[in-house]
Amino acid sequence: MIPKGFILLSRMIMESEFWNKPPYYLKLWVYLLLEANHKPKLTGQRLARGQLLTTLQKLCDAAAYKKGCCLITPTKDQVWGALRWMRGARDRVTKHDTKLAMITTTKTTRGLVITICNYGYYQNAKNYEHDGEGGTKPPRIHDTIDKNVKNGKGGAASPPASETPAPAPESTKAAAGRIVKLWIDRHAERVGCPPPKNANGKLAGILKNMLSGFSEADLAASVARWFATDRKDFGVELFKVKLEGGDAELTGRGSESYDGDDELGRRNLAKLRSQAAADDRNRGEA
Image 1 (cartoon, one colour):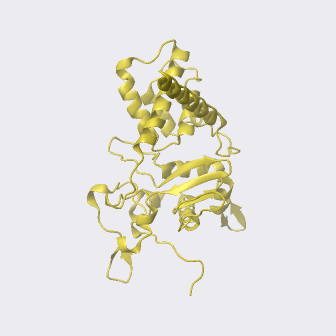
Image 2 (cartoon, helix red, strand yellow):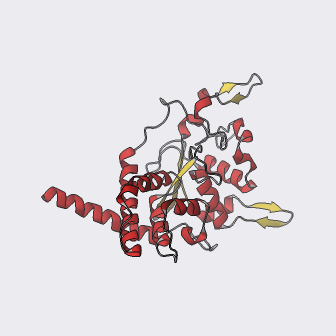
Image 3 (cartoon, rainbow, N blue to C red):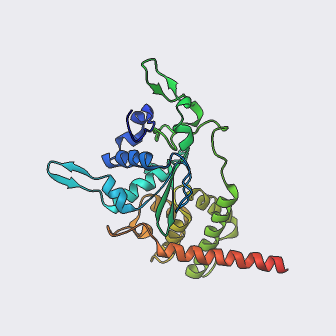
């Protein structure tokens, strides 16, 4: 018997844009699959099936490789860029890009919790069809595959609706509401007036969609940095283009010493949640 178990990796990964990324992308992806819990872990940090607790430094070490006698280790910026891409922040964003994520990330006091999307579906051998050679290949799901980012497990092909975990719309809606409120408040402070009311629907839609590629804390920090810049145009569309393009002024990740922990984002998030709780209490008293 071969020790330490196994993972399933789809052959479709070879047809994807992911296959043409720098080599450390693939090494990181395989590492995440290997380290993710195959069943819930209830001791210490509570982790569900398909989740792992790690740090940027551990991921840098895992993605290192030898070239001759030299050890080449990706920087934290490079690793964070790979994670952002896997979260859905593709480098070719168009109106046709569904931006399906391979992973989601959550910062904790102990490190970074990474959740592999659709882990149960892609790690179930029953969901693969045989190719006649003793191997397997994924089923064809014509209408639910993002052809630019097909991959072996999470986020490339959406499983049938019955297999897909139900989303948490209320949570996303609440997070989007807090980000929109932060945007309006910062716009009023910086420009002297809030954005036009007839543009609020478009503003909310863009910021809500961006939460599929960025954590709430990251997005809150980037909004704060946006309104701290010396510019005349604070449009949300320009903000989206610059942030998804990796603008260092907005991401705050221009230094290799970045450790994935954004104090600015946490402060903004704590303030927004405190204000929301106070509003709820006031409505209850009324």
